Length: 351
Image (tube, rainbow, N blue to C red; front, side):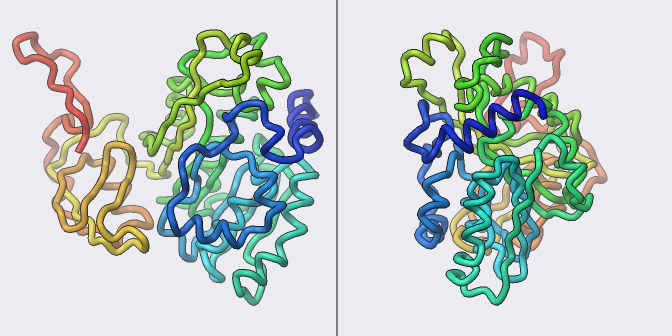
């Protein structure tokens, strides 16, 4: 086992006994969860919640009946929330390499099965490294959704994690995850700092490197759902990090092979029906696509596919075809690189 993996296991298995032991807020969720998640959290065992080290909200909407994989599932908090959301007919698999965390998760499977009123457990946990998902006996193309909460930054080979995740998803499946990102590349000497790595800081990807890794893994059009700056309140750690800024970001990545590298305009539009449970008035796809119920809205070809060729299909009306291409979809901020000076900057915020 590589030294970095051993250090992570020791940090999360032995040095941290609860969230109170964290030295920064990087591994703390800063956004209050929606009401339906708060209700489920009330049913999660206290020990599971005490050993939660996530940085975002990784439980999206429309999960009934899905098969979900959680990368770096820890004590199982997000897995058990997801197991409630998918219902008895769905299934959730958690993968983690830290035995102490797995022991907590496995100890409480029966508790949550009974609490949720299920006839049999719909959750299981596997010991394994998320950098070797292809060696854990998981069937390729078998998962509807992959989630992860502040864990990929702890992996050394992040491109391997994303490539394996892409292979495990069904066509039209999604990776929805929160993690820590930086505004520049982290120097090697900081990456070797055990505490900074364990606190989910020095393993953070520079955001532009992440976008390129995601695209090279098959996730052509990464969508930012939410982002928040992370304040390093521990002065000693802040002094080590200097001017580097960190952000907690939730991304969604769709396995849609026909996505294009840019947002292209085919004259298409969609209208949200208001039928996703808990979202009567509007649906938020990402940080620049919010669809009010009943309003027809023009979209680029990529956004059209993210709604039409995924689990959201039944909740939208779709207009238009692929017959005519009208150029770049300017509503998503795109512009021709050779725009003449007398036309000005045509970049706009998205719909």
